[in-house]
Each structure stands twice: as structure tokens, then as C-alpha cells.
Image 1 (tube, helix red, strand yellow):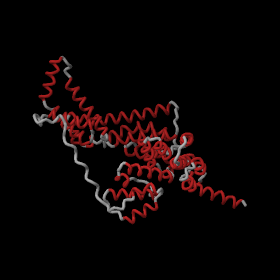
Image 2 (image 1 turned 30 degrees about the horizontal axis):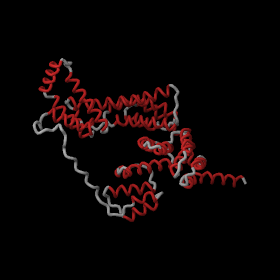
Image 3 (image 1 turned 30 degrees about the vertical axis):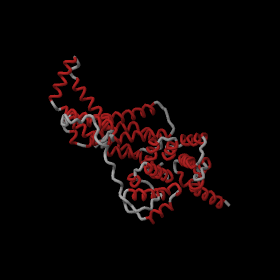
Image 4 (image 1 turned 135 degrees about the vertical axis):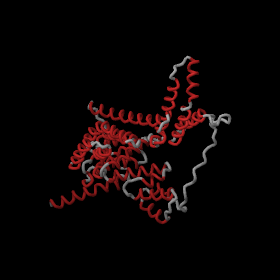
Length: 421
């Protein structure tokens, strides 16, 4: 009798996971899916509450009509759970926070397999792929890392075809039949022959007021034109071109003499030319950050001797470092004061810090990376302890990359302790 009871309990626990995610979630049974998923023994590991929150969030997204009290109930479950990025990302998507959802769901890939259950990894990958497809970013859809789910495989084939790669119709249709929610994916089932991407549209005609027939080679006129175009629509190429143009203009001794004479005539401060140069550099540094942050600083030729080029690279670096330090200081003060947030919000805080740090790493400056890591470590390590050590693997990898052997040894011990839990 006891053996039969044990077999029944074991089978129920084994089947609880598939029933929750493949039966109750598609029918939108929010509370029942959470209850059953929490009892799925093979999937529970350390994060029973997190898996229940994920099942509830997935079921909520399948409902045609969503009641406000049901949303509050799911958010309460997520707040009680450990930092399960999949559930938190889905709820941010439901509230229209695309950037927050994208950051949280992408962070699932940072976790070791033991910390990232297969349902969470599948949800994150499929949502990111579908969101990228909705924006037409087919290269991201094709190259997005993640579990090889049926829906993800279909989206990758669609992306490959849209990018001009040969994908047989039979293979595409077979992948579509294996995918979930085929009705929603049917519009992507393009049976036309694979074709190369369309050529980009030609640029609009140049209507800038800063290029005149009277002075096409005037360094100041050229620099002003490049500056205006860069501020209006910043790109890495425009930032570099504007910085080089200003290098030529600011190096002209005639411009400095003219500025000094004009300042004397107006009774203005004699250092007005230097203030003007700093304002130019500040504008271009802000534009460089809007264009991707580290793009300008990657070009050694641009940092050589010019006032603007070297100043933009320094301005980008200083702003990125200040951004990291501000985020880290806020985390340290909050933890020191004992102010706790919901687990998903603390995880979002760590995700934000990691993204800020990634922009600093993208500068390619090993000394800067070495100097900034202790600030990152001081902020992230206490939070990692509070979140079941889920960030220690990243801290270890970054400590080794930043050549901090002492902190790396500390994180090796943390990772070893986390693996024994």
C-alpha cells in the first residue's frame, strides 16, 4: 500500500510540470497553474515560488480578458519569489514597458542552467525573438542564443529567409507545424522564394543651411554643418566626422585670434574660446552616447591630437564611469540602509548595473575596466548574497577579465558555495 502511495505521489510530482505549463497555462488558468507548478518536484530545485510565478504570468498572458485583481495577484506572487527574470519580464511587457521587459528576459541567459529552469529560458528566448521580429530585426532573430524550442526554430528559419538565405518551403512548413500557437505565426509563413534584402532607401537631399556656395571649404562652416547634423540624428560615423571637422576648425589660429578680438570688443571673458571648445566637445560626447556610447572611443586615430576628437573620447568615458558609479552608489546605500525591494525589482537593479558596466567594458580600455570593477563588486556582491548567489558567476568572470586576482579568489569561493546549495 505504501509503495502504491509513493508511486502515485511521484507520478503526480513528475506530471505536475507538464500539466501546469502545457495544459493549464494555454487555458489561462492562472491560480491553478501556479499551484500545480509549485509542486513539480523535478523542476523545483531552489526556486519553487519562482516557477509558480512564471506559470502564473504565462497563463495571464493567454487570457483574452485580464482582470485587475488577477494582475495584482500575479504581481504579488512575483514579488514574493526569488528573482525569476522570465516572470518579471512578462509582467513588464504586459504593462507596455518594452525596454524593461527586454532587459529582464535577456538576463535569463546570464544564469547557469541550475538557476534558469527550462520554461523560463524558453519563454525568454521566444519573447525576445518575437519582439525582434516585430521590429524587423531579423539578424537578431537568427543569431539570438537560447534553447532550441520549436517556435524559436521556426522564427530562426523565417529570419534566415528574410535575410536572403535559401530555406526550402518544405522545411519552413514543417517547422511551422511543430511550433506553438501556429495561428499567430501563420503570417510569417512566407512561401515565396528566398530573396535578398531590399536595398536601403537613398538618403534625402542635402538641405543643410551650413553648406553654402560662397564658402564650401570654410572649416567653421563645415564644422557647424556636421555638428548640426550630428545633434539632430547622432550616429557613430557622424560623431567622428564632426569631431574631425572641429579639430580642423579649432586648430585654425585665425579663429582663435578672431574670437579673442571679438571678446575684447564686447568686454567678454578672455577664455570664451576655450569655453566654446568645451561646449562643442560636450555636445559631441552626448551625441556619441546616444549613438552607442563607445563607438567613437574605439577609433584610435580619432583620439590622437585633435581637441575635439580626444575630448569626445574622454567625455564619453567620464560620463559612462559616472553613470556606473551613480548606479552602484545607489545600490550600496539602499543595501546599507536595509531597504529591501521585491525580488524582481532587485534583479532589475542588478540588470541595470550590469548594462551600465557593459558600456564601460565596450570602451576597450583595460585600465578603466580594472579601475571600475571594485565599484561594481562592492555594489553587486551584497545583492547577490540576498538573491541566492545568482550573480556570482558573472562577478567571477569579470574579476578575472579585469585582472583583480584577490576579488577573483573571493568569487571562486562564493561560486563554490552556491554550487553546493
